[in-house]
Length: 140
Image (cartoon, rainbow, N blue to C red; front, top):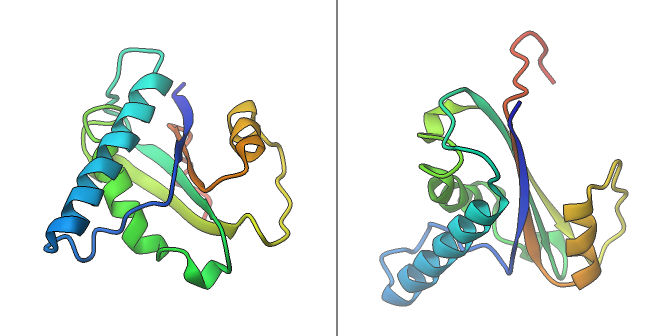
């Protein structure tokens, strides 16, 4: 069973505005950071060829409205995982993308050691979890 989780420090970079050279450089660096974190988290021979479920949670500072858009921040992350965790992003059957502010209250049910360590650092980060636990019989 596939179960990979890791965090990436910092604020995610949106794919929008990549025609701007400064934004393009920040995007390249962000994708490199995501790929490096994924490689560290991988403990077995990957990439997998099975369908996967991906959870992305952006934890930032300030009001949620000030955080990068969920859809714009997810694409660079998913692209960075191709060839490391899964072969191609068309294998993603379930995608859950959330934004949460570290400055607003929330409850975490079943916090993992990886997520707990990131909370302890008390700075913006993105939590990534990939599993092959895809249930096509139940809709949310």
